[in-house]
Length: 190
Length: 190
View (spheres, each protein chain N blue to C red):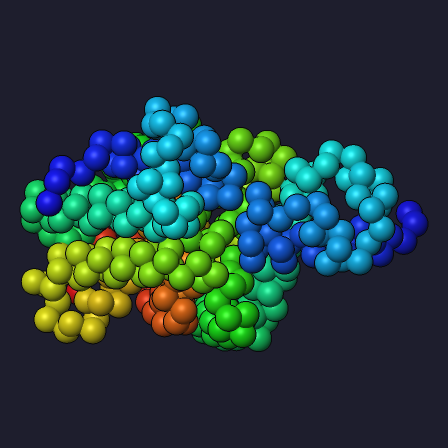
């Protein structure tokens, strides 16, 4: 296996950022190439399936970053609720730092092109499943009922996703902190 | 005050449906005119501010429909939690009936164009505030702590918004029913 070509990685991370900030349809291939400072010929070389293939890769890349962050916070905190509150603080800070232009790396793309796009829908299904699993793994030590831990993890993902939307619109991180605090309280008494 | 012209109303409701299903950027003015069966000249007559003005109107229209549905469910159910579960059942049914193409009438547009678009951001702020208020009004009789009722209402909106995204991706209504059941349980013991 050769080294992963740098242009390919940069195209994926750039696409993830632009889709998150401006949406999938509004981001053209030329915008991605220009921001990534990648040569024009590189696009179809790395992504013969075109924008949809890059979209699925961007969803996978962004999904994996979130999963790794959740796993890191799990190691750093004593309870799942504390880790969730810490994640809410991180999200609130990132959103404010971006002037409320950022948000969930998946939601915008997902709402525009699922379920129509099979490759992007499949990548998003895997990403949400990995987030739920990372959260359920955090919750499990305090909650021997696996199905209950799974439902709490699903609620945590829903609450975070929705809170990011409300916070973006309100230009105020309060919905994120409110959602995390309430779900964290549910988790830590479970 | 004259009657509201029928083409104007149909353009707004059609735009709301198309933005919800395909996104704001991917929906062209010609798509809206064609689906609404409205004459080309009618668009800039009713919306001199162009697509952005129609976008803000569509957000207001869709937001008001949700608020009215929540108020209706509040009248039909004994507790706020029961009303929320009933709303979750409605959403789950609509989403499945649409082949998982529908979803929140605001989220897609909001994630694409806020906070950049001032008119659409303002319309969305009003809509989310109205939903939170409708829910807080439901919760209030059982929860004399107004700030607590407001936080629960904010969590309910976040959980619904995020659950609609997870359900769309998974092509499965379970995340909606899970989120509503857990938030309803929190509300009814508050």
